Length: 290
Ligand code: COA
Ligand code: MG
Image (cartoon, rainbow, N blue to C red):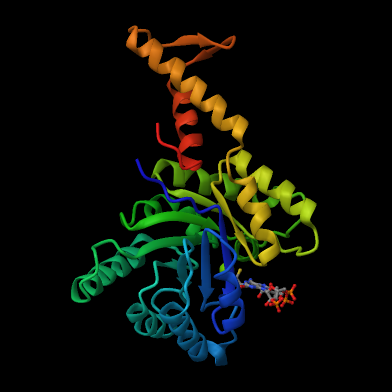
């Protein structure tokens, strides 16, 4: 089974070539060149050109290169696709996703481009941002919209304004939505990526937010500044102790299975399939095979 870790997704405005070039040196799992809300309306066209140029000229190493489009079914989004498809990013991030129809239509269009440009089918991945009330209630259909979809992102800032909630430090107002995104992502075998942490000075707060997100089941988190990247990537990497524990558990499982035993006791606790799957998930996230 192969698994592409997306622990940190670093956003930057696509009209800022300096930030894109810098991001290419950071060994970050993914970068997202933003054509949507991070770019002023009169800079959109320049942003498209800069992102396309960056894709064609910069070396990003192992970093996945994504572009955030403007919302589907807008003239801006159409212009985004026309400018960026020929530059062949690794995929697109779709903001304010609210139904399956738009995503499956985009997927079909990408398939046509792949055929015409002689690219492998499925070359372009899609990631949807769930950040509106309508998107949240359509989670089930969005998660099943297209096999091209690889992850769901929860966007807290747009979401809270769309439901009329107020952002608090504790984040109680977004707990339901965070868990809903994790749940639907897990049910559809997608990665779940948590919202950004806006306070660029509060590294302890970021660390605590990452720990909490991971406990909720998220597999990664958005980043908006280079200094957030190592903290996020470390937080979403299984520790050596977790990896060793998962490997021990799976070895015990294999031994019991070979002896024809189903449920068994291990290190004083009952072990059954959910715990085996959790251990396999740890190894997948660590890039190990089992
Ligand atoms: N990606 C890549 N590089 C970034 C970056 C990012 N998101 N944010 C900052 N940098 C670079 C700066 O260009 C600067 O580089 P330099 O030292 O070579 O000059 C360095 O990191 C330090 O940046 P700093 O001065 O601390 O920040 P800033 O004041 O330049 O920028 C923000 C602050 C918030 C404007 C910037 O971090 C940013 O644009 N973040 C992304 C915002 C975004 O995309 N939002 C919409 C989507 S959620
Ligand atoms: Mg948003």
